[in-house]
Length: 117
Image (cartoon, rainbow, N blue to C red):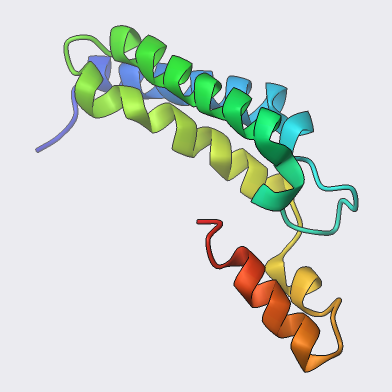
């Protein structure tokens, strides 16, 4: 099934909303101290996490009405588009894993990032 042009515009509008709000405006909440390191949930903190949750819900809510009558399917796409901007702006996981030399430190790193997804 091919998408109609109006649905493509709806998807583009919701994607633009997520890119602007999460990807650009909320970047200072998640930006790592060292720009070569990846974004980690541990560096955001509880207030930042709560604010990001509110922003994600707001994007889903506004995206629902932007993409009406297909808002349930399209409205939730805004946040993943914004997170892809974070993935492009942050460093690779390789930089984080190469920072630790000792096996115990690497094990602690693996245990700390286990719950982040």
